[in-house]
Length: 84
Length: 84
View 1 (cartoon, rainbow over the protein chains, first blue to last red):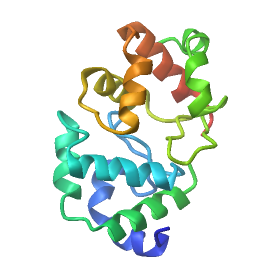
View 2: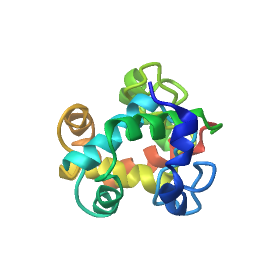
View 3: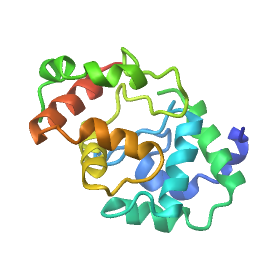
View 4: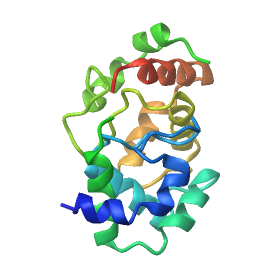
C-alpha cells in the first residue's frame, strides 16, 4: 500500500480541481476524500493507459502521465485517508 | 437534475458491487455515497460510450448499456444524496 504522508506531498497539482481536502468545488469532478485506495490506483492507471479517454479524461491524462506506480500508490493512500 | 427517489428504485443492480448505502465492501470499486451527481452522470455516460474501457469498465458497460439519460440522472442524484 502507498504512503499517505508522501502522497500528501505529491498532491499539490491535484488541489486545483480536487480541492484541499479532496472535496471539489466543481461538481463535474469527483470528490476523492475517503474513496477506496485500490479504486483510485485503478482509476489513475486507467488515465495513464488511455483506458479512460475523451473529455476531461484527457486533462487527467496530462496530470498523471509522469507519475510512477509508487506516486500513484501514495496519492491513492493519501486521498483514501481523508475524511469524506 | 435527477430524482433521487426514482434513482433508489433503479439501483437494485448496483447494490451487489456498490453496496446498499453506496459504500463498497470490495476496495476495487468506488464508494458512490456523497459523490457529485454531475461527475456520476459523466462517469456513467463514459462507460456507455466506451470512453472508459478495459478491465472492470467492461463490467460497468454491461450494467449501464440499457440506461436512459433520465435513469442516469436519477441514479446519480440518488447516490449523491447518500451520506458519505
